[in-house]
Image (cartoon, rainbow, N blue to C red):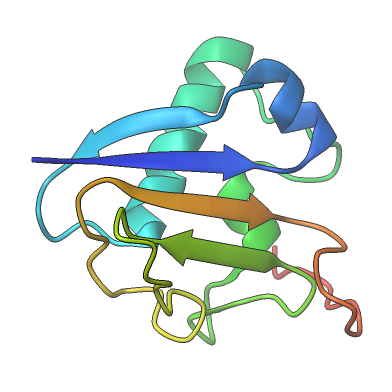
Length: 118
């Protein structure tokens, strides 16, 4: 088992989890597994996703057909050692134990806005 910390910089979600979330996963868990687990926790605590127009965090940040994060999403991940992890380029890579992920669903990057696939 490994522990992962997820911090979401989106006001509606941050109000629900102001200190982020600390989750446990099996050894092969990726950032996609972390986002799915966060979605489950949001559903349990809120009943529905708190951002208008979206059903879940995954829908808000990840292009399911192309297998990548949307352009406007900022995502940083780093290991306990401080080494940055290339989760944006490889979202299926296993996250190491004690990793921290910071996710900014909207406006994190100064690029063109991409309409999420629904």
